[in-house]
Length: 365
Image (tube, rainbow, N blue to C red):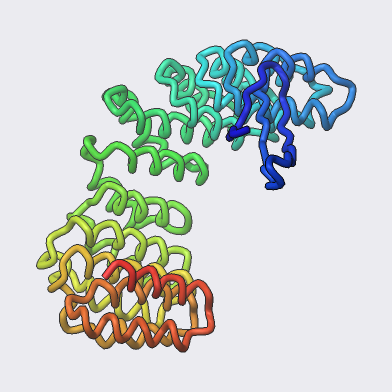
């Protein structure tokens, strides 16, 4: 007998048999195909755990027939324990009917699952929802507004041609919204629309705003590969708040792969990143080291005078800095030096993560 698997329809399960053939044990895995009808009927089971498992299986199956019963669960106030899983399942269904149910819930009085609904609508990325999402962002309940804007931004990333002038104006207005969460969501949406010229506005926010709005604008400049924003991002790298500085470092990690090295050096990016990698906060130092590694890989001559800095960072206190430093060392053009340096890391570093990164770097040389 020779078989890898045997498909048996209509039974949602899996079982493994141990069979003896010619005195040799053979393990056969029999996989049974999950049936959507069985899962849908299980939604009415009196056992809450069975219901939850049925919803989770339906999320995997993405069966069109499951959309209506899952939407009915959202309308059932007594099934609130299943709402989060049902929302996720509807998001994976790729159905316009699922979008309608999610929008109805977002427009309702409950606020418990706004983030989950935004995630589900983001996964659906249905352009037919744009008008309704804009309406909710403009006139909906205040807690629902950031969820609507975030879902709109995710959909626009998938359908950038749907970003007409009116939608762009709305996003720019929301970027200055008094509600910080709505503002951050709008800035994130603008980050995903590189064809729309909003760089000046994002650079102004990154310079003048504070807190989460500044972080979002810095991230947007990196995501948009905004070469004109390099100096603004470098200024953010020196911020006293590690959350802001690490966002600037990560934005530079994106920019250094695309901006010309002379532009980067003129803005002092190399010195700023080296300083942040050596003395920055926990997250900033790790992200700055990653940015240096990416820059070295993109332009081998860009950091010619900083090879010993890379070697020094291999002894940093943070294992994340050391792991990223392995990537920087591997990108140095002197292959003999890089190999010798990385083997020293393998022999001496006590972190499994760092050793794995060093070995991966060696394998790539």
